[in-house]
Amino acid sequence: MGLKNRTNARPFFQSLGNATFDIFGRSTTKLQTDITQDIFLKLNQNGFLKERMTTQLYCQQHHSFLADRFVEGECPVCGYADAHGDQCDSCGQLLDPLDLKHPRCKVDGGTPITKDTKHMFLELDKLQPEIDTFFKESATNGAWSNNGKDITSAWLKEGLKPRSITRDMKWGTEVPLPGYEDKVIYSWFDACIAYISITAHYTDQWQQWWRNPDEVQLFQFIGKDNVAYHSVMFPGTKIGTRETWTKLHHLSTTEYLTYEGGKFSKSRGTGVFGDSAKKTGIPSDVWRYYLLSHRPETSDSEFNWESFINSNNSLLNNLGFVNSKHFNNIVPNYINHHEASFETWKEEVNGLLTQYIKQLDAVKIRAALSTVLHISQKGNNFLQSNGLDNKLAEKEPLKCAAVIGLAINLIHLLASVIAPYTPDTAKSMNTQLRADPFPIPDHWNADSIQPGHEIGKAVYLFSPIKPDKGREWRAMFGSKEAKKLKEEEAIRKATKKAAMKASKSSQKELNA
Image 1 (cartoon, one colour):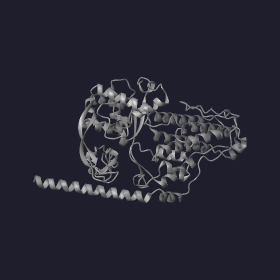
Image 2 (image 1 turned 60 degrees about the vertical axis):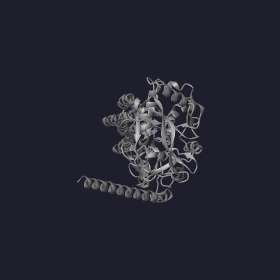
Image 3 (image 1 turned 180 degrees about the vertical axis):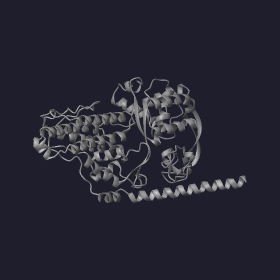
Image 4 (image 1 turned 90 degrees about the vertical axis):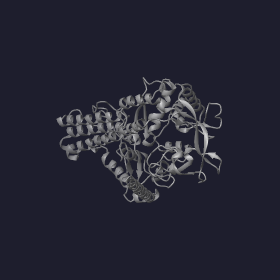
């Protein structure tokens, strides 16, 4: 969410009004240390850790080996000038700090030197056959998203190599080996283990979740730049302990969300981040809806203020309410009038409901949200096709009662299916209905709200946003800077392409 620190995170989420926590913690705990060190020692005992001498970057100005995050330089793959020591934010390539061209220390800007130091390596190459088997089974049985499968396949196809899991740092989990008192376990190794330790903080029965693969399925939602840690390294770590663990079942991988044609950048002030979103005064449900409807599931998607405003206003038009002065807020007896078209309509709604459930089961979050809107549109079309107005109430009161009763029940269903996306909106719908939420049914019978039930006063679920607010928010959240970054990136890519073309031409001349 781009919050400045963990201290700000909890009150921010709670201020949204619809975010709660079973437990809110961090990884700097004794439980995290104990579980991480136990896994580390099991891997060592089983022959999957090996000490190696390595060459690392060392800053002479502040006399310290540089952790990956304290090194920046040019990406050797795409040429991005500000790649980090462990990964390039531009192309997503995982890196070793020594791979960077023109490395520099982030602390003081100095040019680091290389220096030898010993470290422990996880022998992923020895584990690859078992990781291959795990991947094939899990990706098939768990129906991983295609991008997650592609990224993992590329890693395995290239061949896994030993990776260092210790660092010359003072902050972190201590290495439980003699001679390593001045080193710590590297964060990429123990960060995923924090999933386990935070569960252990929540309950002393944590092993019922993390050591119970026959009854527990693990779903993980990861950006594409972190796939390998969760699909290769963390499962490989568990496999290497030779103990029973609940491993990844379904991996839902997202691409990147860009901002107004450029990249989100906290340091450059481009993009709207979690702590800044509140400044707009827009309810959290609108943010939830927009971000989930634009979730980059198969390709990058863009955050754009114009589409954000249009998205809010389309919700305003799509999700409405039904009330009628002719029935004094009392649900009329809708069971005495039947038409074939009503049954056809209910069958169509049930078809969409089945589709919605299948989509959520398959973690097709964006598609399921679209289906919710289709269900809502079915309701709007039902009212329009049956001519719900004062004349209908006067000339065909029984039909009018049936139309209103079925529509009220559809709203109750909509409150349930939209609740995972916009919980405050669902709560408002149920409040106006004066009805309790009901579990999403496998089959909708249109009878959860019975005749004679009194509903509340109808209010709008969303408020319109004026188009000129977009200009205000663009200025506030650095859209011009985002476009500048995009132009800089285009120039960099063009330069790289020209350089590669020139290199190929020179090689052809030499060969000739």
